[in-house]
Length: 587
Image 1: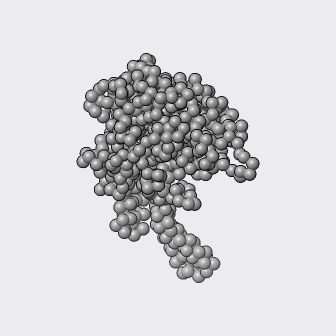
Image 2 (image 1 turned 90 degrees about the vertical axis):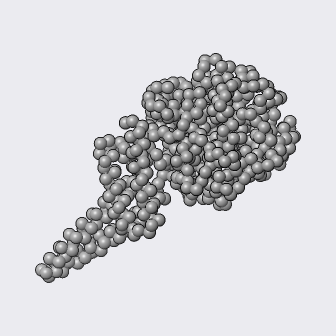
């Protein structure tokens, strides 16, 4: 099936859901809505599923099947009432009162079914919708990168220690040297950069990545120029609140034991930046890309850099600037907010300052973690920028996520009160900012230890192939932020599908990546046709709406993991795996 036909079929699927929403807004009675949607969805379902029964499992088929089943139930109840009334009349004429009584009971039963089928079945459907709105291999947007839409996935189970428990006992945190093979991680990163840059020579690959980024953003294909500044955005959010004063005063070090009298630790070994992916990036930037240490800034502006990261990086690269907004203690570089607001949210409600190290950066590298998120469904490179602005916290941004009640006290799990599509998403502004997403020359997702259900707690072992109840042991990189998040989203939504039962230490909600509308920001970042009515994304307040920021697509299935590029089509995502046998097809 060609891409044009796929796109047309997808539009028809989405129209059924939009038709239902329109009828509700116009206050049509439930019976009219049931009949209208029932006829449309039944016809559509039969047209799609009879030729190929496997389509019944497609997300949009699952979305319309309840409408169809409610309609069929309604028809059956009408037929039942008609038959009962005819037989009841005959029984009364014959004075067969026992039979008449039985038929009256049946009449009430079928009438009840008829009444409820056109109300409760229909009215519940929006809350029941889950997963992505679009089906497999229907790309939207314009790819970016040396090879547009290319995402590299490196996997090596030997990179992590399968016996790691991520607990304070024996200092068995996932980020300790004993739980990571640093040489394997270094090779995973370097091999991925070579694949992405299109050369077996690491220096040439880095040069090509810089050249391609400058061509995309500035219209001039030039490499890195000496003296240009690079900011590496990491993920360290829990360091701002999960450490005791003693631990902060000791260089932001995590606890190594529970002291006498302590009942529990505030620090949970959260799935955040660990030392070794960033260490390899520093090595390659300095030794292959020609960047001086003093021109590199590393940090998470909203929080501190954990001591276990700083000690590893500083030992090898003492002249890199390790930033902190609170203090210059412990050899940190103090950063300051910009003098004026630099980030303008496109719903016109708020603006934000950024920090000087970001305002002055010529390039950014975004290093996120692979994990679900209670409010956003997933936490990847765009969500990583909730730590980039100059406020004390990111609480002012959560209203635009799909499940903002996760942030309330007590936390409300799995309530996508702002779910769905074509709604304002602050993540799109962050992706489109000239200082943030559009200034990023490399997007990285550290998936060595994939995160659990609660983003503030530790990693858990993953079940989907090829992980098979082991750590995810993966690194994903791309120059296309939309494509990268789309791929990582496919991994997370299939891993956290409600069927797998993860370690109870972090499995409060097994389905957060499958809340309805998790990928809404990716639809909108890819194509302005998916923007909400009345919203024009212009986070720089320049008067120029953002262009397509990349290409969005879902794979064909979680076994093959193939995108359009792997299947020989143009204009979609291509997922290249290391080793290559994980994802077959053209690449």
